[in-house]
Image (cartoon, rainbow, N blue to C red; front, top):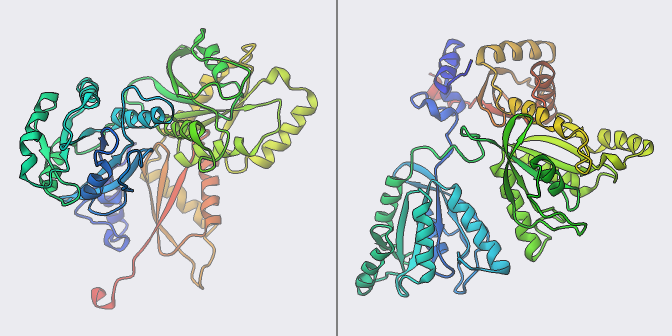
Amino acid sequence: MSQTPQEDLDAMAALGLDPDEFGIDADDPGAAELPPAPVLAVVGRPNVGKSTLVNRLIGRREAVVQDVPGVTRDRVAYDALWNGRRFVVVDTGGWEPDATGLQAAVAAQAEYAMRTADAVLLVVDATVGATATEEAAAKVLLRSQRPVLLAATKVDDDRLLADVADLWRLGLGEPHPVSGLHGRGSGDLLDKILQVLPETPRDDVGTGGGGPRRVALIGKPNVGKSSLLNRVAGEERSVVHDVAGTTVDPVDSLVELDGEIWRFVDTAGLRKRVKNAIGMEYYASLRTQAAIEAAEVALVLLDASQPVTEQDQRVISMVEEAGRALVIVFNKWDLVDEDRRLAMKRELERDFVRVRWAEHVNISALTGRSVHKIAPYMRRALESWDKRISTGVLNSWIGEVVAANPPPVRGGKQPKILFATQPRTRPPTFVLFTTGFLEAGYRRFLERRLREDFGFPGSPIRISVRVREKKPRSARR
């Protein structure tokens, strides 16, 4: 049975626990677990002052600003607060409709931000006016079915107000004059932003909002990701070549597998650490990371005929850190002999200690061997990812576990677990309210017992600790 934060507060009250002692406002049931904030994407062509305006909107200097075009390349998210409401501002690189090379990768990041945001702020340089780029952007945004605001920047005085009025022709509604440098009009713009942003963010990106479950196909180059996509789709959806790195952009495909429609995303292979990659590889890595964040379950493909590499382990770590469901797929099983099977068994025991909870399946995308087995593994992983344990069952379980194996003594005192709850799923996240800090080893022990008793195959688990705050003596009298 699902438990809401208010029900958890009631359960704490029944146990005689004061929410204030854990930093929870009892008058705000949602304070136990803040909901995710809605997202505003700030887009526009290069050098119109997006980052300067972002710094003004968030009230601090975080976005890098320089008087040359193209300084911002990635999507960068910043937390913002206005009139008591939280939201996230995503600064993007300059958007050009017909960009090529590196600039095309930057534009792809901006387009992804537009697709996944709750609202979009198009920034136009009022000193230049609407160019063909802004007109193309307006057409894209009008089709996006997202709330769109139009900001005319660099309006430092009244002389440019007549030029601002000309921006009505873009068809995006009233243009809002603002100066990111001096702050002119920024408060009015923030008020308008709050009016168009929803109270809670969109839930149809990466959360299975009623459509096909999203599957990210990831792995280092040439492990057979595109071959697998073509196999499950039954046609050539992705370019396949012996040369590693054929895929650069993520490719979305709706395919039917085991009687169910899935949305597969074939991604570029990850060669190096993102910080060490350059040029096209760098932006391909960023887009692969974005595909993981937008997915619900990741299929990490490994070449079964070759030893597990550091890149393989790093890709798996990316999925685990992103909190996505995971299935490890050993491809090219048709090339594996008996000696390699024995070596693989040792590699699984040695290299996959962090993700022992992840199930793995052996396939051959080339011959089709066992490809049909992937769907049941994904369903099981997603079921774990969505799984919730009721507060009553969880606290009964934690009481039994702690009675048999109490937390280790720390600083001469033994911490006690007073209450436990699971405030969220995707991935399953547990919060323990305690009298003291719990060692990392003991948290790992609790995770292991959770898996032994409740399952969770194929899904990471998050365990956080809230220590009871000590009240001043005057407050206790």
